[in-house]
Image 1 (cartoon, rainbow, N blue to C red):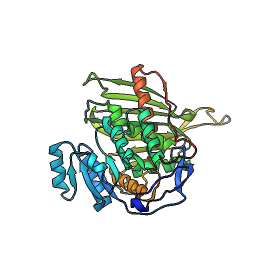
Image 2 (cartoon, one colour; image 1 turned 180 degrees about the horizontal axis):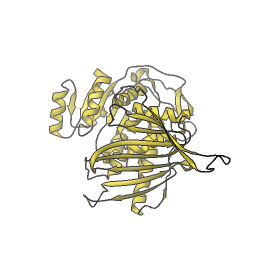
Image 3 (cartoon, one colour; image 1 turned 90 degrees about the horizontal axis):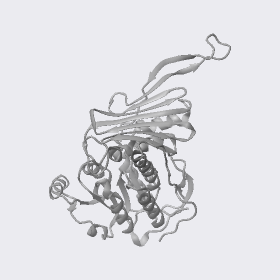
Image 4 (cartoon, rainbow, N blue to C red; image 1 turned 90 degrees about the vertical axis):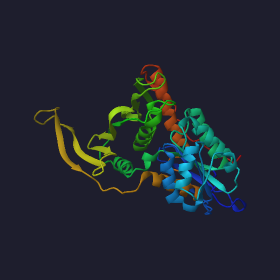
Length: 387
């Protein structure tokens, strides 16, 4: 069991005890509270106001309101923009004073990927709950250390795997779990665009964690192995395009294609099942999710044309979906977890499993596509005590 502390007044704070249960990834981890202290949210600070920071700030303002007090940003130009947009927020350039403020209970990290692990660790060691944008870290060792630190200190650590909060993706998982598509056979996804080009990480580390997160979420587990090919066209140090195959238990495959050097913006995930097929197109505002009654059925041994296949081209269903903004749902979930001491759906161990896949992909790229095993971490068993 793991003790997760809810954000309350420090003098009145007490420990909450969780019971082991199965999380969405099929890993034993605590999710159900035996005791909950429902207290004040406390003060929230956001670190970073660059590419993704303004989107987080907009939703943080709507979800947290007056509980959001600080924004930390190194760039004077971006600080000026943030201060003009949110005049009630204290916009500063130094993190230390914010972390030493006893009223601050939670920190949101929205900075370049290379800084995620160090900033999240500083916040956790300062006794703050943390939401960090993907990826959680750039090495599995760092990611596991962060997840373990959060558990040991009784803190909420959540990773911004936003697509796990997309209504269409959640509906896909429900459909798969219901058995409506039969047995999942394979998944393929495309995340393509012209830009945003980066120099510190390759295209897969930049945008690919979304697709690993989606695949793990839909299949309920991490892959056993990866094989990756990529190419460096714009920068000799990082890949601009990466094509990956993930091997999941039971022979289920996932093919992921990511690129920031493509003429058309594409965000599409297809899941092929033995009975039906699903297509999620994030750019199709009219029908983001489609259910295809299509497949190939084999004739029985006594039928005419025995052992041949009959192609089935049936109806297309477009299910009704909620209009919830995924980023708002993500931040709302984080705030709820902090308030009541609940383990997030996309907790540190979820993030560590995604990082493990990305690290294996790097190894496969270096080995020119060699199949590389994934050492997916799991939450430790047994009691975890506060340091």
